[in-house]
Image 1 (cartoon, rainbow, N blue to C red):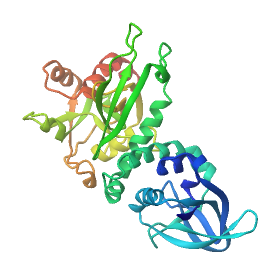
Image 2 (image 1 turned 180 degrees about the horizontal axis):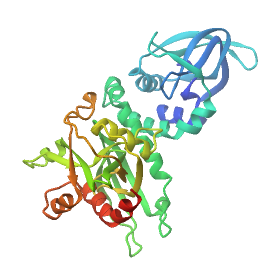
Image 3 (image 1 turned 90 degrees about the horizontal axis):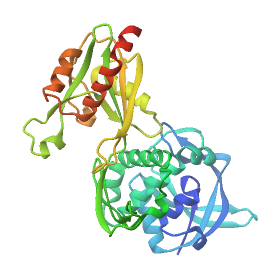
Image 4 (image 1 turned 180 degrees about the vertical axis):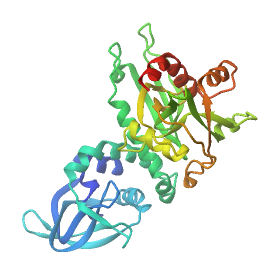
Length: 373
């Protein structure tokens, strides 16, 4: 048995329940504080850090009687992020003292920012963090903590996408809490993307439930797609890059012409992503974004959700060195007249679905955009 003090995100009981894999009513939780310490945001991060601070107080909770499996799960969740446990003396609400272990970050790992607020963190990051923890703990015992740490940015990106999806309007004719029954769910593979697998039943159109079906999906996150268009020159900008999935599908031409696109980071809205990616991939500043729709990229195989835009811009130059080295990108761009673009689409020269969708949207709205300049 062990007693631990939590000063940061694990004070949020729903997150603690996910990490420990059991409900709060099975835990002995007591408010407590640690003298001469303070909790601040880790600078440029979305989580807190604890630091020595004479005369200040770090508030949190003491959880008593944690079992060996609890400690193993906590160590797994925290272990890949540079935390170690130390013993400290706490003060309880009734004034009594108690000793407990605390996860402290490795010295110099982060720099402190502003004082941290649990309430502010819960409001902005609580739901995303709980979903991310579900995926992390779904790999407990199968994937190392270090591997989780290297993939955590992608995990959080998928978690933010899941939260955004939950906020979309429900189907007024169906209730997924009754009309879909999940017998088993598994996070089946972790890489840059994730794979989830489920044995499930769903309500058919005749009102009966289907047999149990095994289905899997590639979980990507949200992406922003922007087709840059210059209404004065009546031209678009496309980018070309190597696409491993096209190659792995057996296609002998895996270099693909596409609009600018990129994954939406947690805390970022799709418009911000579109503008950022235009700069990163094409060195291009977009003046204005026109929304061209939003949709799942392939409902039969992927959870990726696309936000589609046409970006009004001055197209005067191209690049053959776009993208970020740390993401392994090698991107060149080309400026193509609208008529040539549509001829290429009619001739099946372009094979990227978001390009086809945004190009056809542009064809419908081109006269208005040219009139507006």
